[in-house]
Length: 264
Image 1 (cartoon, one colour):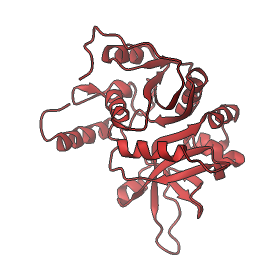
Image 2 (image 1 turned 180 degrees about the horizontal axis):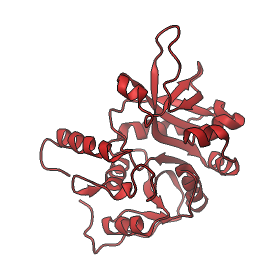
Image 3 (image 1 turned 135 degrees about the vertical axis):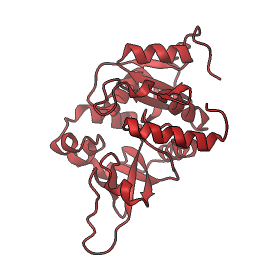
Image 4 (image 1 turned 60 degrees about the horizontal axis):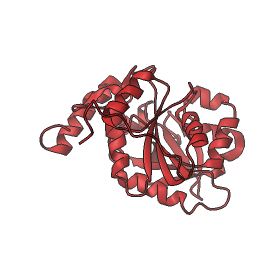
């Protein structure tokens, strides 16, 4: 159980840690303002994401990164480490700022709208980061899509993976187009692992037209010729990303099924 509302989050340590999960959270979502604090069960959405990080075995710590005072205050009430950042274009830019202030070997961006992300998947990304081949900058988890509605859903980002396991393209459209053989559709998860060098590079690169059009931040590396450095990692994850209030309703139903009892 989290500490009571009178308990403040412990101060962040600057001691070197191996792998840190950073959960970027912002208030001003176009589709769902205030989403990180939306209630799922009797806890805010960000609490569920943080809890999945706590359950992962390969992380040394997890911290919420936000530029919003309301989110910071709730984190303190729940005893969750929180770091205030500047306003950023993307969550990964926010993670990159945290990396400049929190020393670690690698950083895992766990999107704040993935309350059911598998701790095992987080650990798989952590393990992949521990044995990166030369030239690899990032690890991005994905799963196979077997739901036609999800394939067509623009809130679900699809990825095309090359023969060597690296990202070729991300899109909200169904890619590849099924003109010949029936393709496998792959869902990009909001679960990215980076080296410190990769995050520094990410911040230096400008947003390109593809990233701006699709609003998919990992396209920044692909668009600037670093797609070969994004290793895609297949994981097992049957969770649900909460992009809209309608998704939150489905998340409530999923939480009830998983708990089979009182809500958490």
